[in-house]
Length: 394
Ligand SMILES: Cc1ncc(COP(=O)(O)O)c(C=O)c1O
Image (cartoon, rainbow, N blue to C red; front, side, top):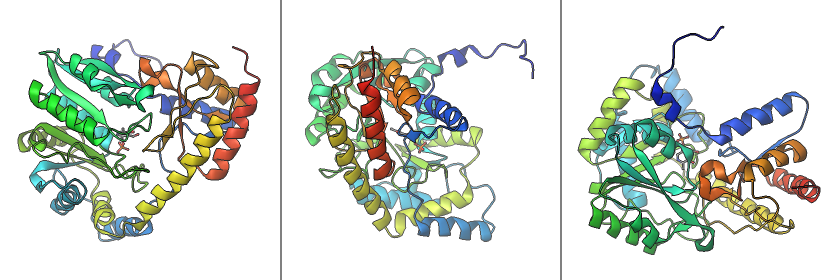
């Protein structure tokens, strides 16, 4: 098809992209040429969705639960989510606070659209999951970056965070455990952030999608802090904990008036989340939790393999991250241009990884690698990287 003469909306120029999907496409091209690539670029568990969840989805289709639902989600799932929030964060919410979505990414986008006016400032960690910045700029608001520091295990300096707040700041986005670094905010960090949010009257959007992937300490939920839910939005979902990326199921928990606004956006965009997917989500929450715990334990083992292997490669410095399923090694002693180095590792080493600066300027000199891949593949990837980096000429 020819290009048309009709211009796109100006706002499209403000929309970002996600390097994981771009690198995945290039890796697939190389595979089509017959190359064997190890995929450490994409953030999705390699496990199958637990059997009982799949069975619930299949039974729902067989029962002809294949029609529209209310835009906010079915009452039974919203109740199950409210109970899950109570169980995991200790906070009492009702179904009226919960909006079900086709993935946490949709929750993030519609929440930002519901709340931001042009010119509002939103404080975002740097590096961060790219969708925050992309949608903030898309709606005409202004992202303000606050660095996560390698020297602080990729946590904020709380003083620097407070200095970034101006009278125009409407919201702060936090994400712990964190993509792309695997860093975790401590209880002291979240208490410090809460007192800043209270003092400056700002909303916090807490993306806790990796809350089931904490390896060394119990998860410290920002949403779970007493007195904060009136000024906090919780983002969570099923993709990571239940290995359900392709089902598309997430949720947000909000003060009631914000929930109503996000529900109205849901109605105007997707109408609702697939009915049988929502039914499967209920089983994920109320059914056997052992598969989720088994996946977490396996991720913990793989983390050790990957960190140890990376630390053995000359020029690579890798911390042991506390959560999620990513490592964020510092490769600046080999090459400051992380995107160039990530391309080299793919083209010459047949391992797909992401440049850290694609998550924000402060990621420069780092690469992100996901350990959502088998231990054998991780060992092979380490071997290939060691060989390729040994031949690297800056
Ligand atoms: C921090 C973070 N939030 C949200 C999402 C979106 O997850 P989904 O839309 O699959 O629920 C991701 C996925 O990579 C993520 O890393």
